[in-house]
Length: 291
Image (cartoon, rainbow, N blue to C red):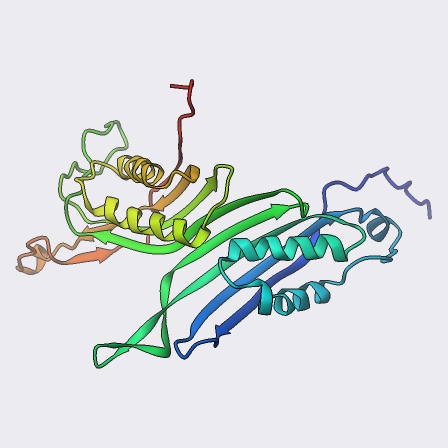
């Protein structure tokens, strides 16, 4: 049998690491406990040519070692924001891995609030919130780039929203409206300007401003609300250079009760699961000299 000659190839960009490491930490230094509930992904880059091409694993960190490192360093290293903990992990892995030159770490932090009993917040009982604190840290142990975000934040307002004056052509069926339910699931990601940052404090400011802006105006479109949110957040948070939003439009359709001889005074809706509008975009800070 004639063997086909192998095509010449070269190894391109590559990385390896550990995904979905689920880290939970209880802070017990006081009677009033705190918790951190974080899912961690780690990806290492470096000189891994021999492992791919020759099957030579010399000086390679095992992904099991990476998992153990996430837990082991959390005792002393995870004392504040996950962004700062990402820097701790990167410094260690670059130092520990002879062939590691750069590391990317991403976090999904699940947020918990204290339960309330007899009007008092409990010291060690919690319920988990829906929105998540996301973060991405990348670096070579000397220089770092950091981004933070919000995921799975469900927001809705029952009025003060519309969609009208849009293009009409042969396939348009949607009627104009100046009174609709506006609902979405927020995914946001922002980048920082150079300098020291209190990441948890900035995250809280972004979260608070996002909720405030969503409800403080009549929304002629999700696009306009996206722009308003970005403008308000960049105004309130000078640490941020730009912010990206992804807004799926979770349609709530007025249900036709009239066919049953019943009135629907704009109170009964079908929460639609069919194809939805998706509005995305960056809002960026104008630098001096650009305006």
